[in-house]
Length: 417
Image (cartoon, rainbow, N blue to C red; front, side):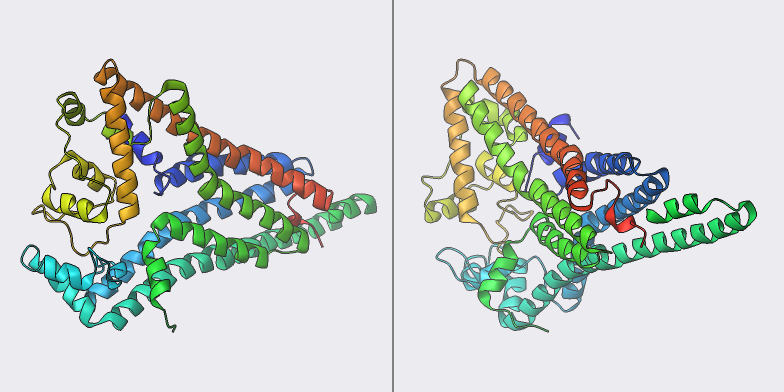
């Protein structure tokens, strides 16, 4: 894997890769450090308890958050397959459009992709059953991680803390009998089955893993607030979780737009394409030799006609690389997959804009090279900015909020009754 491919992966805000890097590589270690540092302002014992809780909470949550949805869906897909259906069939195809749909694709690809069409026919003949299984898979992928992260994990973590504190108190009682500490010092220590409509099913079909993670995060927020040990901890948890949701799923997309727009204004270079496309030598040579084959227009008819007739074109190759189109091994478009025309149209626009900018430059090679470096720089800057906000700014704000609400820097859940 090249450096550019790694940067490309972490720059895709619709995938889990930026979340993995920010969460496991930067955010969690920083949060644990800040938690310990802030609680040390109260006492070493509070800091030890808070650090242990934070370590268990963050890493266990990350494991479920990042792996729970894919694992649950994989199990769901195996169940669907055992029932004789292919889980690759998109339920969005139930809605017949002008140039795609279950019935439309069955007729069009009957002879071109007979095996894939059999999957479509099975789903069409058992619409209700397939919809129900798909909906149940979606519910399981969301509800199981929420249950684990939002309820079971925090309650287990709190139970461990109670057990440790109880054991500590017993040890202190033994020590008290042996050493007869002053009343003041002792007092000081103590102070511290569902029916789904087509609209809902269509919405579910649009959810990517990262979208489900955002939805799961919402459920996690409710769970963490609900399982809080006292009112102050509930306030602090709500503040932290809502801030985390915004910085994980909303802010990076706006930061990326701002950085790309700024680069466009400063350097007159469109950097909205993937850096892997920008560095592709075949693509650069095709621009130089004016051999880029593109759809006639952005009309749905022309787009579908082009992607079905020119699967080996660079446009289709990169559209497939961007997961907008899927082709079978024989080069035929997979009729089980739904094509998002809006995304394909947007991709075509960015593709054409980049090509025109490259053609108008003094050196196409230098232009594409410069564009790639700027795009990679923007991706790294986005990760740095969003990670800093998540790993440093948000935890600092959380403890400032904590101090404002409780008058103390220590975690309110660790407060002695």
